[in-house]
Figure 1 (tube, rainbow over the protein chains, first blue to last red):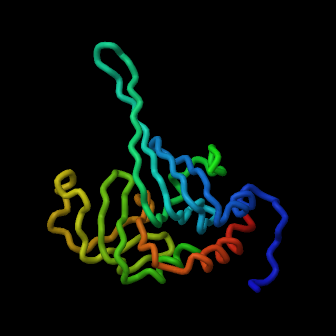
Figure 2: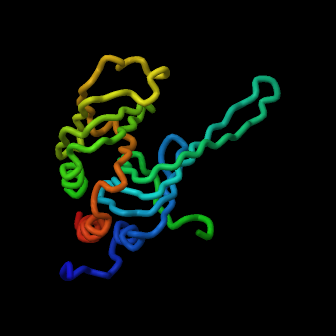
Length: 97
Length: 93
């Protein structure tokens, strides 16, 4: 096989390692969120995700009523590299998959 | 090192690099370095009407730090190899 791998969870990156080949939720800067299958990651939190859905959230404020209009834009990408410096948090999906 | 190796294996394939300023550039991956700086050839901007800045640019060097995403060919590399490499990586600090 691929040799000895430590299964003990010692540091936060080990927690992410548990999610390899599973679907995860990623919160990014600029009000973006990703849901996809985690294929690879490194200590910078650079990641490769598969079958990704990206959600971009924008808030418009009406000039007169000052009402907040929240909009979301969605996009699907099959295979995506994400640079780690944009990542805020990584988690299992927030809703039942 | 993991993603540096991954991108080296991907040289010659078509990718779309999305920058942090929302500009998306499609081109052939020519080379990459340890900082994940990227050189693309045969480039064209994805939304040419919105970003006319680079209409005549066909080759470019992109600083790694300005990249937000790289859209990859789905059959680019063996996914199982990636999983194994990631399991071994991200340790020690």
